[in-house]
Image (cartoon, rainbow, N blue to C red; front, side, top):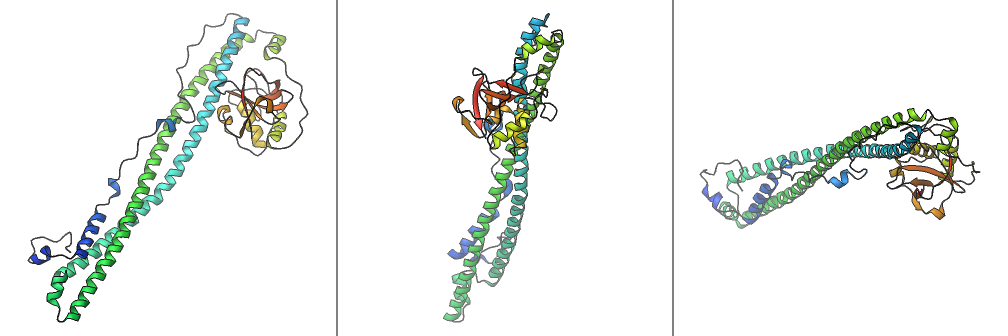
Length: 375
């Protein structure tokens, strides 16, 4: 075998012409290992847009605000529409926050995996260089002594036994290096693949964070626009009498007796302690709430952490039909989901209904109901 650094114009041409099969195998393996380079790994695969947008839909263009209301009746009608839109936007905003948190955790996890993968590649490369130097040294010594192959061993042998001893040593040396280089090649392949996978995963997670952040910013702008419209309409509604305001909010329902046990019932009991607290966009307690803020707060008191948005809460637990509702079940409105409360029994649920209202019991609307989940 010839060292990769030896000048081919040396004065021992027989070494170049004659080479045993075992020695050739060593050369082949050395070449195979030396060309393994983590920098030449395939580039990370392209980001899957569907995976990056799994938790939220792309935000639509903000609609132009309607004409300014000129009387209380028009203001009330406009407020109902704007509140419905604003609630949906707020819940999408919460969903974007949920998605962003998940993507940030992905980045942390994948980045933690990159360090060990790179360290393993560095170790493998150091081992590769060490083995290469050993092979070079053995090849050089064999070359200088002329004991590279069977023919040279035969010529240099003083007796048949001497020849057999030299051949045994050559075969043993070749076999040892073949095995070591084979193991090294496998190690380099494995660690290079691990680094490539980790880098690709980080790239995907970072792209998802960028998209989720952009979506959150877009949704935040839409939420702000909705709040401005609500503020404008509510200024006109301030002209209404207290009775007119009560009529607009609708009647509450009687508080049912809360019996039983389980996570849902405990959450219902916790929510009942918040009766009368005002609805505020984006609030999650303890002084005010929006709809999913109330449910996430109540279930946390019962020992369960729910996603912040109603759309994501609609994915936890198991589905429950209308005729199977039990106290403690999460009740969802609209499609896509943008409102949530906790079923209290007897056709009622507790929720934070809308701006200008408070946490209270209400009759569950069959027409708005789109599903329920039992945690």
